[in-house]
Image (cartoon, rainbow, N blue to C red; front, side, top):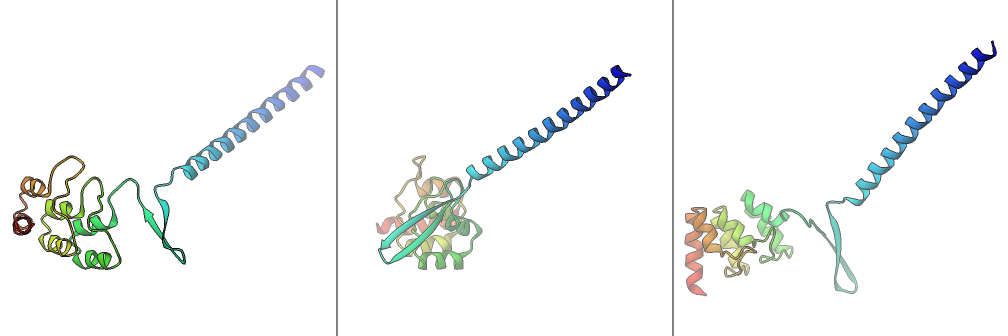
Length: 155
């Protein structure tokens, strides 16, 4: 009879230990996943102080297309104009290319005219070393190429 009792107790201890081990493993995995999620943020905030009395917070996506260039790709001329009015830099590169290069590459001639009117420098090359004319030619963007040629001669 004593042998039977010891086996039952031993068996229940083993089952309890296994249950505790599974619970600990689940908690460890959950904590690890939460920790990784906290440290892998896709956006970072930058604080820019132009005036000591004024704080401007700009959200920057370190990896990916800027919202300004995204509006250009979509052909949303009103959003592009609004963003320029709000202070968007018409020469700031996104994914290694200027907004003007995006407009030329995707044949957005009207947007290209707006960018040029607001100070876009057509001579800035992309990070790969190609200029705006080359992108327009490779993309067969005839409307954009006409705008580029018209303004290229003026400079």
